[in-house]
Image (cartoon, rainbow, N blue to C red):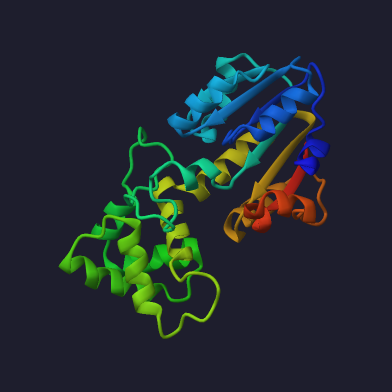
Amino acid sequence: MVEVMQFLDPKPGKTFIDATLNGGGHTSEMSRLMKGKGTILGIERDPEIVKIIKKKDIPGLVVEEGNYTNMAEFVRRHKLEKIDGILFDLGLSSWHLDESGRGFTFRDNEPLDMRFSPKEKGQTAAELVNSLPEVELADIFHKYGEERESRKYARAIVKARKEKRIVTTGQLAEVIERSSRKTWRTRIHPATRVFQALRIAVNEELESVRLGIEAAMELVRPGGVVVAISFHSLEDRIVKNAFRARGEVLTKKIVTPSAGELADNPRSRSSKLRAWKKS
């Protein structure tokens, strides 16, 4: 949080975009530092989170429900000029993990959905798991989850779904764990990367990150800043390459969470922050 505010430097009268509202923590802090004088365009895909954020009545915040890939359209709609900074916090919100009930975690047995917005067109994770050929499932697990056992897990899923459709997180996690018992020697549950891969595929996350970062780099004013917090190497690679292509990279080395931040928010342990300034 501290580093984000240092790079964005929110002050009264400035204009910012929070491309990933999530729980509104970053936006609330920006609003406080701006003393409520200025504008923050907040973008959020999930309609349920939009409802929660609007109830908070954050001074200076205008909310748009949708994908940050449509950022330019939202800027035109609100007639915003001279965007001083844009923030992307690309991690899952605590609400998605703890309260959404859409199958983002295998900690609880939930419907295998994984869509950020049920309003958007697209298949659920259950539909992908039960319909895709084995080779396509393996490709998703390998490409988006960097899972070494992708073929084994895809084969196990195809075998299991012949007997019964896989419709819950518990079913899927059990299939993966059962097929990996001989090789599971780490502290990471064997289904972790499979769940990550399915979530990315369902929501087309990597393409959204690429388009969103490019849009942000175009929209900020000269001297404006784009800050991106990523949580796995695939996102971070997209951000790094985009930032290096032009402008000034403000983070010569990636910024990782401090000990204090980790104590307050253990889920931030894998986060990587990069910042960029428009020439």
